[in-house]
Image (cartoon, rainbow, N blue to C red):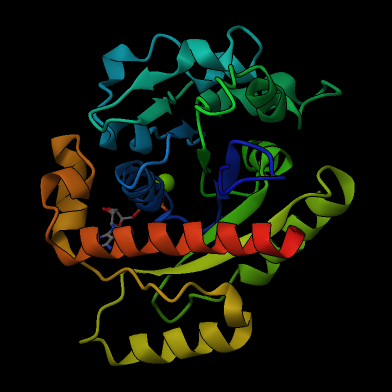
Length: 275
Ligand code: ADP
Ligand code: MG
């Protein structure tokens, strides 16, 4: 049967790094698109008040009447927030600025860390042969705040984008510590899926050194695929499209397709290990 035998479906991956501008949102959009393009059914959950993943997937700000704010505050079911996107087999639960206030609103609630997990549990699963979603990607805000903790508490694994620049590793130990804390207190299933190096520029002498340093520090957790810095990747969101729809042939699109197949291979290896 499916490659997910013995595992929860959908697989829930949180894209997390408390640094801003490292490629979390870009990776949520384009990895999601690449996974959908190779046959997965994908849901992106936008947990960043900036809502850039929603915008990049073509959801106009005026069309976010039900958003992840309503889901996490308990006013709506996740299914009610989900919208189809310009990409077949890729849906998104959009975010709005309202999310900025959520942390304070639910700070005193006992289940404040369980809001995303509960929302996912209420999602229709579909038939066994035709699951509604095979992958859920959660785009986290640039902070280790309650929104990110909610994502980690609900996820099977964390995908960490790191920008190929001098301070790439700065903050990584804090992130790994937080993941470990969540694993021991809230979510024993949680693991690090992998580290994806982003915005690689071969003309930058330092970039190769950064790649080597990160591989030394994180070993096999680092995906082989490195996402190049590519202007088409940064242009695509202003057209409300993933780069794969904007320019399929560009180096950025091709890299995200390779990353998607690498991730699926890792999933199969996990299944093999469990069998
Ligand atoms: P984060 O979500 O971690 O804050 P983003 O995904 O929003 O980071 O990326 C930060 C900026 O870098 C955005 O303007 C985005 O368009 C740009 N960017 C991300 N990846 C690439 C890439 N591979 N090539 C060129 N620009 C990129
Ligand atoms: Mg972002």
